[in-house]
Image (cartoon, rainbow, N blue to C red; front, side, top):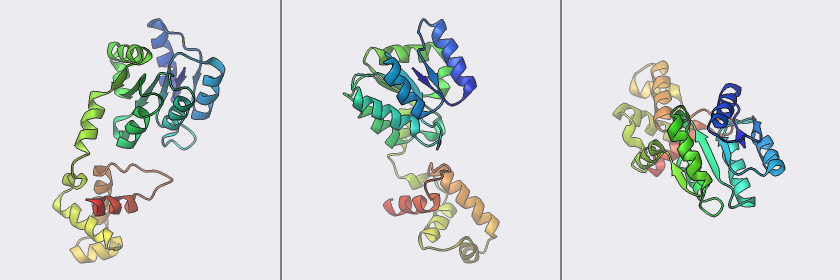
Length: 212
């Protein structure tokens, strides 16, 4: 069972899996269709993207966890883009079901066919596969999240935490508002806060600062 919103990647995976001896019983483009298709086809393994319609947040992951709650032994391999690797995603997946038959793999790994097929096989057999790059990123993020910021970016974030506007920060540091905007963009990127409709990144950045 395959769930991927990109038509090109979805069709490419269907072809790849077929050539490797797997039967794709259904290929869908959103999380709701994934849940329905699994109920209909009872597949041996599910391969799903994390971010899918309608919100392009973590719908695929939540669908996978829900399916694992209903079918603890259902093997699931989740694909994620490197810029969206988050500790919560990995932990929620790895804690789902009975703790076996799960995988968390970067989409980049799909291009390395042998590694991807081997990961699929291992998950289907009840093993656990976590992409080495995912492990490295998760371990790196356990350290001080502010260590990636420059001294000026830390200064800007501290002023944001005081409730200052961009204009007030610019006046305080004697720079232009455009310069402050660039610093804030860099801060959000380094703190791994991608754009999202349901969250306010500036507030999340302040919370990260306060925790650190």
